[in-house]
Image: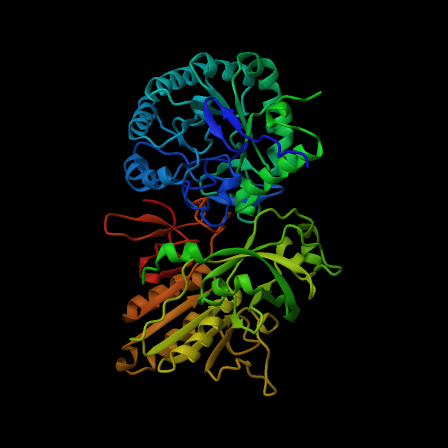
Length: 310
Length: 309
């Protein structure tokens, strides 16, 4: 009998029992998947974006299936910081699994305020800065495509985080992803989350109107996976490997083979997003599949696979 | 009317179901019967009319025969699960049977026609909040438009079996005789099999009364003595313009009304926040989730114009 492979991941100081996370915006406030997802298989959860004030989100329709993917324009709908702290944090504290909170805002101060409040409240493993949402007018992708803004938001977040790790989630829709990633790292980011949805649009040819109420949305699902793997590979080779910065890779992961592409490209952990919509147990299935792969290939520690691209 | 969320969440299950039967009814309407094993019994036997399930059709193949008008569309890749409100739930010795009615309109429903008895399919449910039947109700007006029929059909059975004191009247609107989702009896009448009066309209007058079902309902209501409206409730499911009109009729006549809405949804479990419905609330309009707060809403609560002022 061969011993079980070591699946534990140290993600910038956060101990994950498995390299598989659930991506922001696809697992609610963390407790909604109870009973449908085997949490013992999952490394951690990343909540939907929390903003300082409650946000009702964009006009419907907010989502539509496209070939091998879907478009969404939820617009960061969430209950806001206060309600999150009072209603959701007590549940999260009892979950016994690391939970990262995705944070969004339209000003740098808003990011800092949300983070400092959550850091003080406790019960959170770390933060993921959303500077890449394609569905809001202010903040979001307009920050994530500007090196100066990425740097400013990251530094402010880091200062507010009370020592907790800060991951910066980036968009692929930039000319030079490495320079944006470098701006985040130099401003103190503990890790990078790659990638957010890619801006997209669908048109109803009968009405000649956009399908989504917000005209445009973010594309997710298998359709974006090759783009995401490309970005992870590039950022890993040109920045993260030498800087010792962990990457959470994600984009269209539906099964273990998809996730392994990201890990081999250089991701320490992966985030399952749209896959959870299709199968609420997807993240656990991916984690089991990664373990099986390790057994089959004689991999003793998942760490051996990270960035093992030949 | 508020359902206990905790209980709903605890009772949903993602499980493999066996296809027991799958047959065309008429036109583009099909019926499929799914058998849930014992593990699914507790959850699905409690499915109330208007609640829904999600079917994973992503690995279902194309049938040999594809309606020509859907030939191009049919090749599209299916990613997300598809929501269906069952038309019947039956407990058997070995488990639970769910009967669904579906209309072949796109790549997912085309694929469903290829399912044969013995094959299996992944089912997540029961999801959402269904119709709420109260003992104070005296007369239930059930209004269905086209493929909105299944949860209404299910509701009719439940009222008949569990609420015998409630009088039931059914209004069914369809486009044309070829789009009738039900069988006809020997006399050419709709075979409802529940001994319930059915008012039928079609857009082209090919069967039933020519016109809209909401007009038919309005005409019928006018002939009622005022005391008849006491304890009356309208339950509706169908195209949104029909539901909007139903809400108006109910409001104008002071009749309670529950409607089942449809929205694009990615997850069906409240994760994605995609399926919002604009609703009235004391502090101002709010978005509610079709998958969790609905799909059945109090008609008075729904704001049908989805754009903000």
